Image 1 (cartoon, rainbow, N blue to C red):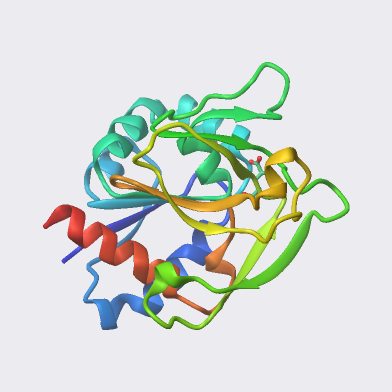
Image 2 (spheres, rainbow, N blue to C red):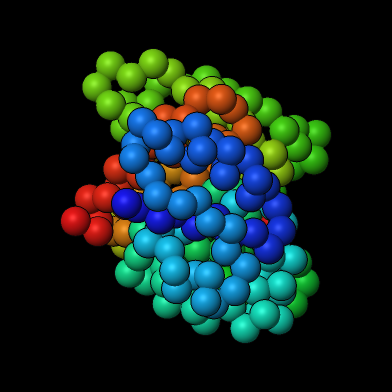
Length: 214
Ligand code: GLN
């Protein structure tokens, strides 16, 4: 059975574990593992990098000698980054802290950190999400100081969810900012599906991981 790990250095890892536990029986999942070390990473088939604070998460990973192993893992194995996790997967990030931050640079997109500014630090929006299946009910998306994908730098990157035009604060927002993409073995989402009781995005990742490993 599929062993999914959740990177548990910092941030909202417990909520992802909760969501996966809710699916465990229906999806026939194996152990759901908190990953904190290289050995822990080597023991899982797929990984979720949660939301939190991407600079801290990268620093902790670096101090534990885990950053290169995470990069190697994400190059080929099913990996899902949510929010701060999306920033870590990205090839480039703008509006990062002074001095920049370490990224895994495996997902060929540019993300803008804290895209939605201070006043609207957090918001939810309900959107149709055909990528969740034909006739899928709309999904309620939760954004918390979220990044957005402001450019896609490889034609193989598949856009999955776009915000309505005008939400966000850059020129790119006029066309509607991208908040979910798929690229080969990678899934990147700006929002926090683990903070709702709707597990459809977790199921999406489980199916994607299964297909990739088959
Ligand atoms: N703003 C955070 C960062 O840049 C991400 C926020 C989140 O993961 N909820 O790392």
